[in-house]
Length: 143
Image (tube, rainbow, N blue to C red):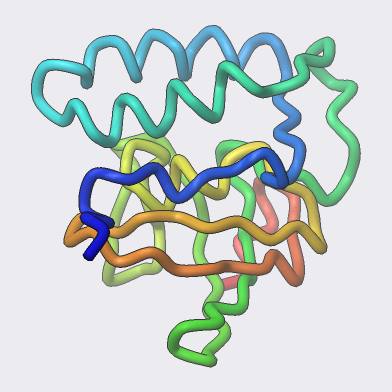
């Protein structure tokens, strides 16, 4: 039997990640500072950042998840749709559906575009497939 706990659910078919240069720099700093306290989440975020294409600030296309975006995704495991806002850790509030980019799901969503699907691993090792169905730009808070 395979040990899925230590396996990386990512593969070469992962969707592209696109970030603006300012957020990329900020996210690298946050991931590095998180590496001692939450090494698994830091590694997940760094993996996403390392495969990201970087654009100039202000050149991020509409429909790409960035800090402050509201994201609606379909979870194939639970067969449910959910809308969250990806935020900085200081703005996170799970009761308000505001999830930190420094959580497993926040790290999985950042930089993805509408229509993208990704496998992500929960804190308890469960692998789930999420499909991004809608991205609203920062400031719209459509949750």
